[in-house]
Image (tube, rainbow, N blue to C red; front, side, top):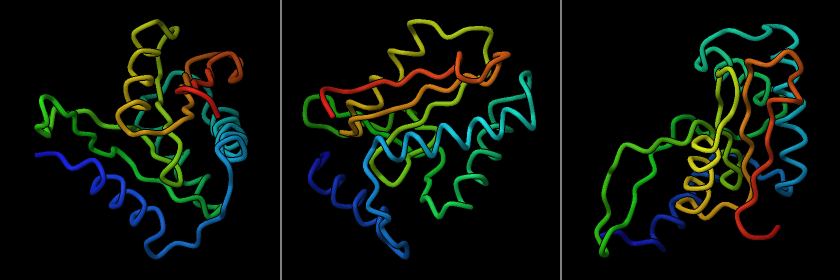
Length: 149
């Protein structure tokens, strides 16, 4: 049976375990993540696999001492039962922001629905949907809010 309180406690422990909490808000984190993504895009350009952008973005964020969890498993709860349905958040930033990385011709409604689901299931308020297959990086980034910040 899924224990939501336990999940949130474990998430908080992972967020702080062996890591100094920078105390940044979601908005401050989003700015740092965007700027790191912009640096990656300037160096690599469009057209690579998502995994390449993920690796480089994590490297950039590590330079800023930002804690990143990659491919974080996200269970769903159905009728009070925790189910491992194979959902994976590309990047969980400081335990409070979701980043979903794409390398597609253009973002669509399914990509938006995916990150909204991840935000809802993880109880995070802010997410960035980042598509690296654009000429201008800023045109491929969508800021997604779950509720209010």
